Length: 101
Image (tube, rainbow, N blue to C red):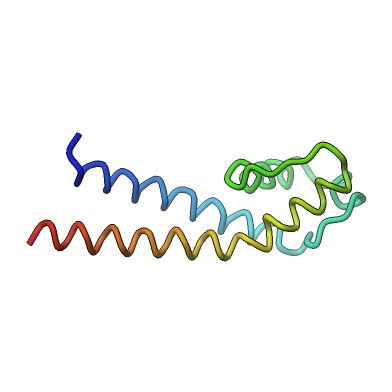
């Protein structure tokens, strides 16, 4: 696979991560900041959405209080992660365009 194809593939992966993080943020926004009680009362759908955030941030402590704190950090970091994905995409797109010229 040449560098152009690899960069395009990277852009596609970044878009998937960004879209899923933005979705999770919209869906779970009203539940944050999380508490132990909130964690224990999440619906099945909310747990699945939370898993999307956790999967992308790789933070999931074992104790409920630590889980709540860690997940609150993930939620607060999501806009920054989305911004990084967007900047990466912009940079890679510019490089691809310059290479194609």
